[in-house]
Every structure is written in structure tokens, then in C-alpha cells.
Image 1 (cartoon, each protein chain N blue to C red):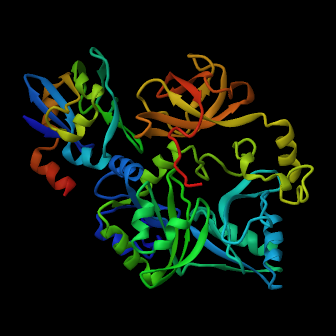
Image 2 (cartoon, rainbow over the protein chains, first blue to last red):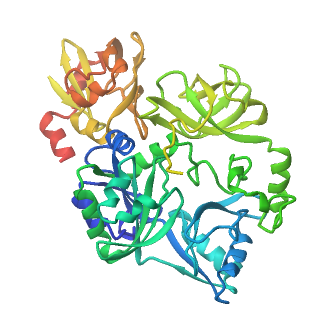
Image 3 (cartoon, chains in turn blue, red):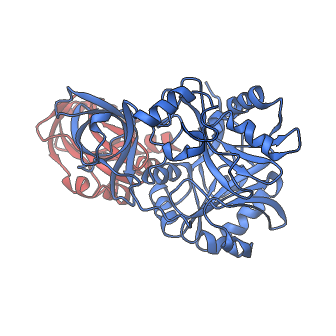
Length: 379
Length: 120
């Protein structure tokens, strides 16, 4: 079956093709998996200089309180996520999770306070379901809009600030997780100092019709290379960040996933607005007592990459199975195989020796702290 | 005699022994290799058996044995430095030498012109 005709295209599709992208189907879109440089060079370039990513497939949603009071939109969002939204200052952004009644994760997302509304970015594969979920749960109090009329790009790496400063000098005053409106190349943009690579950088929402012009301006800079989804995946893996659908899903809770840091005190037991989100009973209990399994980092001893799906055992015969790898591959900056996966409570301590099943053999692998490379966020 | 398979391997056959590797096209499609696993010398395979594994940053792929035979030599240089496969796939990046069980079977494989037509 040829489903390619049904694939959606981002506003940067023509630009991607002109840059020599190899396009693949991803979350219903035709997306660049790599450009001419290839995954390895694209990955290393992002950590050494600056990389430009087309992430327009992701969902951009505005949430506006029907009452006109933005605090009402915050309160509505707090019924969907175990996160302090009411306490999120204007011009600030925060990582969040849509949870279900069992405490599982429906999606991970970013929530930004834009003063008179909230701006939410969700994963491409989940965006229709997320939007339906939001409409059903908070559509009575909030006006929700899914913005298919905007592109989204990420500019990541140590040179990202200097590159963006050539178009917009104010960028230097932003710190990690700040969000601002700005005018880039006569386009009405939303810039946040964030990303998903472990590097300092920016995510920029641009009106679709002007996206290519803004990207061409950024790509004119000698430090910038276009980067595909292949390197996006290896960069986030090295940074220890979860990929929805691999490392987190409806069968994993925020505590199992090691995402407690995303749940602020005010939403926990004893907090002013404790609970009140889907799955609160399960998640609050796990915050107190821990979960029976947990997501950990894993470093293989040999050179063979250990990939998602590999079984983890405590013995080299693979008999005492204690977990499964959810993401794994080669880390170009870690210069070796890196992975993450879920293991039972007893096997979570860094340094724990385990064995991963790869092509019928069990290879030594060690529980390791994440990230695998030091993050460089400008806090 | 130089032959090719539809699975993007090349075979250089001399005196009943085939030197086997992956084609330039295959190396380009796979991207930068970070790991190669070769069979052991003395191992025997049937045509289509999983003889070797190559891994890029993104994914693992099998390299199939192109004909029935026995592994008589392996290229350990590519396990030490997998990038050799990318830089010289049809030369220094060879994988293994296969003593063919039935050398006449090689006639049925693709010649260079037919392979070039296959990959366009």
C-alpha cells in the first residue's frame, strides 16, 4: 500500500527538498530524517555549533479563557496536568504531562504563559487526540485553537544565540524557558529559549507563509546546518530526554518515568492545589512511596548499540529478567552506545551491572546517570 | 568475476572464493556506520542467512550471505573502524571471504550493469 499521497507536508517541505533532505513518513507527515551531511555529522555539528530543525509537525495550541481572565485558563489546564500552571509567570514556559485516570501519560508537552492566553506545544503523533481531549475537558471554559497555520523550528547548539541575535538582538536577554513575541524578518514569531537536544537553543513559531524566508536567513549563517529527525533522536537520547511512544506512554506513570521534577510541590500531597489532575491518586501515592519500576540510563560496555525492545537481565544467561530497553542507539558525543529503559526498583542504582539481549547474546550493560552529555542550558 | 545481489552486496569471485561486501549504494543509504559484527571463520551459511550485522547511529541492518558457503577469512579492520565501510565500501571495507559450496550458483547473480539498473 502506498500511503505517501496521504502524508501531510510542513510549510518547510519545499525548502527541505531543496536542502537535499531524505524524507520519511513520521506521525502522518513527510519529514526530513537527514540532510546531505548525514546523522553523525548533523549530531556533532549541533553540539559544536548550531543546528536548525523543522518540527512543524508538532501541534501548536492556544488556550484562551472564555472569561477573559488568564488565571481561569491556568486553572482549566491544571485539571489536565500535574503541573503548577497558575504559578507560571507571564513570558515563562514549563514542561508538562497530560495524564489519564490510571496515572499513565497521554502526552508530554510545553505550556507557555503568553499573558492573555496559554500557548501549548504537543507531540505530532498525539496532537489530534490531545486537542480532542482538551476540547472535551476544558472546551466549556476555554477557547482552543490548533494552529496548522504556523511552522515550528528549533535552532539548537552553542552558537544558536549568536546566530539568532543577528536577526533579533533582544535574544541575549532571554534565559532558559523564557518565551517572547518577536519580529524576525518581518514575521510575527513566538520565541522560547528551549529545545530537546540538551543544548542551549530556541524554538520559534512562525506564520507558515513566512517560515521559509526566516529559515533561509538562519541557514545563510555559516554556523548553521539543517538537522533531520535522525540526529534529533540521537541528541535527545544523549540528553536523557524521553521520546513519547518509546520511553513514556499510557502504560508508564510520571514517577516510573523519573519525571517527578515536572510535578511542583503545590500539586503534591500537602500542597495548596494538591491533586485535581487525572490519575492523581496513583501519582501522589507513587510520589510518596516510589514506583515498582523506574526509567534509568544504560551504558553498554562494548561497542554494539543496544536498541529499544532489548530485554534486561541480572545474569549473562538472560534468565532473571528485570526490565526492557525503551530507547537506545549510538551516542556520537558519548562516543559509544547509550540507552534508557525501565528496570525493577532493586536494579535502579547507578553502577548496577545488567545484561541486555542483543541478537541472541546477553551483553554487559551498566545502569548510568543521565544525561550522557552535560546539558548547556542558559539558566 | 564481479557479481551483485538485490540485497546490495558485491562479490568478487576468484578460484571458488568470493570476497563479499556491501555496495556504494548500500553504504550511502545506511549512513555512517558505528558498529560491525562479522561471522566467525569456519562458520557455514546458506544463501540468505544472516552473516553479519551493521549498525548506523539510527538502526541495525543484517548483511545476508549471498550464496551457500563457508567463511574462510574476515576483515577485522572494519570491526575496529566501521567508517572504512563508508569510505571504501567496494575496497578496503570488504566484510568476509566465502568459500562457495557451489561456485556455479554465482552465475545466477546480477552483473554490474543489471545491478546499476536496479539502483537507478
